[in-house]
Length: 133
Image (tube, rainbow, N blue to C red; front, side, top):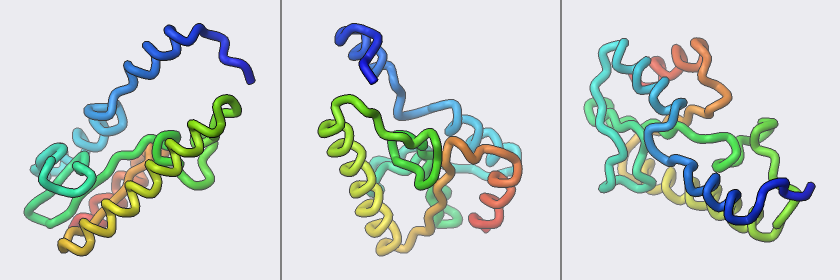
């Protein structure tokens, strides 16, 4: 599939993609706050800078975008058909970085939950409460 926008327009669009305070992340944070959890955000001293850190429970939560972190079996994780070499390298590196960060966190004694953007329903968020406690 050929890109329908110019290179400069595409560059601006990609530059506007946020990596903090995304709508899925805000949804999870709001849910946790409503249930009385207190947390820290994006701790730079932890591997992978987890989106949400619950120090009291020694638990971290990553709120992942299905495309950027390649959610297995998700339709939103479809790789682009153009510039395949770039995207395969980029997305494979993201997956490997996530694995490395998860291993480091586990080794340091943290438990980890991953919430995918496509799983933000009440059922998944309720399950998250059980994972934390």
